[in-house]
Length: 259
Ligand SMILES: Nc1ncnc2c1ncn2[C@@H]1O[C@H](COP(=O)(O)OP(=O)(O)O)[C@@H](O)[C@H]1O
Ligand SMILES: [Mg+2]
Image (cartoon, rainbow, N blue to C red; front, side, top):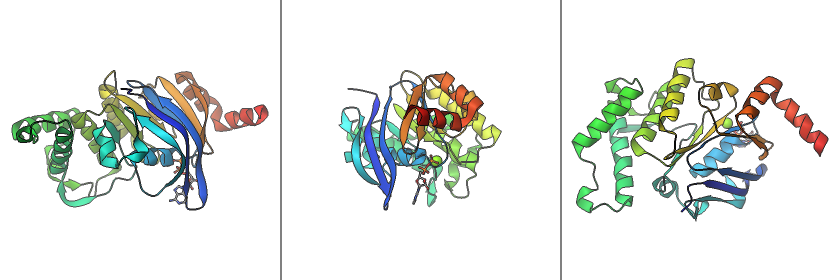
């Protein structure tokens, strides 16, 4: 079974507008792969489609993970395959606490793994320990677990919750869209430390960002650049530095020259 996330010629529209125009990308399992690109290039659209967001019309292509075309699966089935998909704008759920949400998510995964029905629910003590350790690592106050999901959360709190979920669910591939989330430097550091702690042979990550600055904290193995709805260049970490130094216009001009 392949742990690589493979996107083949993905095309998608919003309404009449063509947004993704043939995205080809392979994210190798157990590696950190960054997608960079100017605003409006389609990065969030790609992340949302991987997550199964319903607003997009997919007009062509495939996304493969663990030998399945995940475009045929519901968002919760994708999650049970080990994909962790963070929406850029998480919904708030009044009445559901962070702790209840996390426990439900863990139990859903355990049920999928075919545990004996009596053992499907995580024992309370085990859950509490996992939650406490996860929150401690993220410098979160205990009271956070009792708050309603995303209700009134700051940008930094939403991001911490994302990493807490990752810590507890242990996905094999995390897709994170960091753009536009207005992280201050503290939140950025905590998110980056969380990703660095979790990423490794058992978890790959697709990190989407407009800013090179995130990549000062999270060191990618591979960098791909998205422009105008497709990937225009693949490279190593040097590519991110080159873009920081020369901007996106340099690449745009080079591509125009080559056409
Ligand atoms: N809900 C929407 N309705 C219409 N156009 C949209 C919508 N969401 C995104 N777009 C358009 O899709 C393009 C890609 O947007 P997006 O995926 O958010 O890019 P990025 O994340 O790279 O900034 C932009 O031109 C944007 O205006
Ligand atoms: Mg975006």
